[in-house]
Image (tube, rainbow, N blue to C red; front, side, top):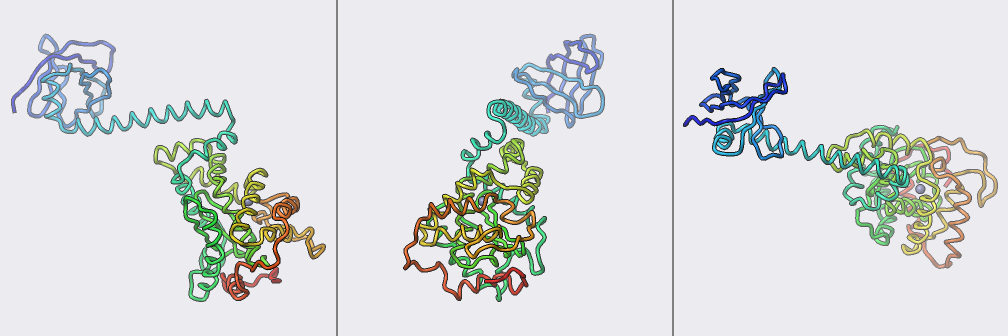
Length: 387
Ligand SMILES: [Zn+2]
């Protein structure tokens, strides 16, 4: 290898003084010499790093302990020779570019989020942003939330999901039959993934991007397949309206969204989302009425009874019913009713929207199929099981 030399500017890292220097490239190292010949630095080629610069010059630092000295060279034969002799420079340069891009993205993200927060406030902003997200973002959020829920939810013996063993399979098949016309009629851009959760809590929820959890406790409350279909239709409404993504954004804040953009979405936002979803009213009243309206229309298209869902809601509140007064239920904060307030008012609205039903409509499942669905989690004893 030929030795190459030229001139440059050296900063010793201790003072701000710039020194014109003579630079000499040898086999093993790069020597930096003062005009009087004094050796200022001798940097092994393996320790050379290229620092970011927009000037087109080659700015070198040394990856070692000591003051942050740097050497600047004009582009030219010497700079090229150094780049060729120290291959680590190239890799370092690429990762430097990536890091720079990340910093720029984060800065843009911060500015955008602060501006948007000032203009709209977070809930309104989430409203505006959620419909713009690609569905892949919903799905990724859903996956993370799903993992957290599976970890956090107390479930009975036999695993988180029902319907996977041979004895529970007929119930699962019945559920798939119930859901199929709803999924067809909904025509969502994401596949529905319904999981029956082995839990006595009467609840159902939709995760961002399509996963729907139907709790065994709610299946046991249902007195007709159309009531359960109504629950599914309502949850499909939340998926279609991107309510899960909206809620996740509100709960996790924008850092959550930008975490997606930059590819290091961690559990923080998801944990907040899960905690809030399970412990307090999940969606806004507006989102609930919108999902109810969606459910009525979807049930009608799928050939089910749109009003059945309202009857189940009213029975879950336990305050008032078609059958007359019922004893006040002991309610877990995780109950469907707790996360879906104003149940009786909603029942009235649903029934008004549903209108009268033609008498010859068949239920969505045969009695045998419905019985199988009711037993999808096996013979868990449930004191409220009066169907
Ligand atoms: Zn809802």
